[in-house]
Amino acid sequence: MPKRKARQSAEQQTSKAEKGVVTSAGQQSVEPETGVETSDGQQTSKVGTSGEVTAGLRDAPSGVSRAFHLLAERLGVSELPRTLFFVGWYAIGLLLMVFAEVPRSLEFANGVFLVLYALSLSELAAIRTGWKRLLMPVLLISIGTFAVEWVGTHTGFPFGAYTYSDTLGALVSGVPWTMGLAWVGVIISGALISASGNRWLRALETGVWVLLLDLVLDPVAAARGFWDWADGGPYYGIPTANFVSWFIVGALLSLLLPVVEVQPRQRWLALRLFQLMLLLFGLLALKAGLGAAFRLSLLFIFIAEGRVRLDSRRQKPAI
Image 1: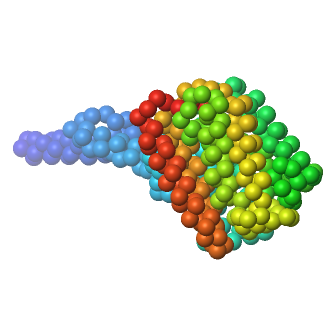
Image 2: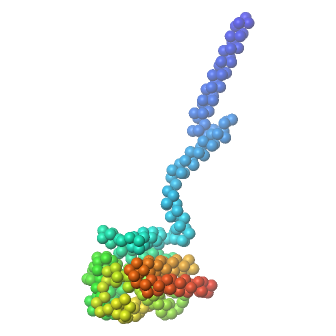
Image 3: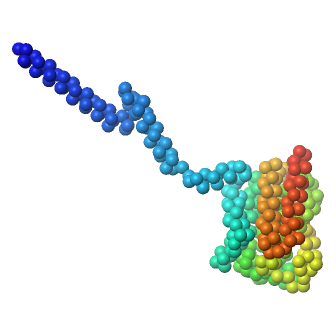
């Protein structure tokens, strides 16, 4: 009898031990999948969280992409995809043109740059006008300026005698197809920076900003072979009629833009894009040995900054 009881007691203990092992193994195999809380429930929760974190890290953007998104948010363009894309294209173009040379196979990027610039400024203007209301003025400005450029290349009026190369895009009857869009970006930029709510006063100021940009842009464009002047002039071989015409064309065609209240964010972003253009062509002027154009680019950057800052506490501008 004592031996039988001892044997039964041993069998019971063995059975309990086996059940304990099975239960423990069951917990290990089931808990991570079901998330059932037992005495090891905290561990189960940690395993599930770890899996989610791992998946999150796997799906997270790379460090470069993260930095780019943070920069976009800081610049205030995270919700403006066209402007964001232009800024990225601009950065690459600046590095290539200023610190290296754009290979012949990538010269098409010059025309793309002008298109993106127009889309970016149009996007800023559309914040208040909406795309439908802005579409017709943009088309008219693009067609009108292309027509003026066509007349200019065929007659020498109103800018002076000049000819285009195909660096800025394929030529359509002697004019790059991108030129109308380039004018769209320049004119909208000036209109957004302007502080006047009066259509005519705004037009005059827009003409001034267009002129200031051309004083830096035109010498660089000529030096890089974008176009060639035939008769010459007092400022880097450019005729005075060219600058007078830039002012008049920019002022008159800005009248086509609708008059709406401009948000401070719109104005500041337009200012930054305008300054980026001045910076790019100013650095290219320095690279080409055009010292006066480079110094003017710095001066105009500060003038534009001061213009907007001094007016930031007044009534919102309109376009």
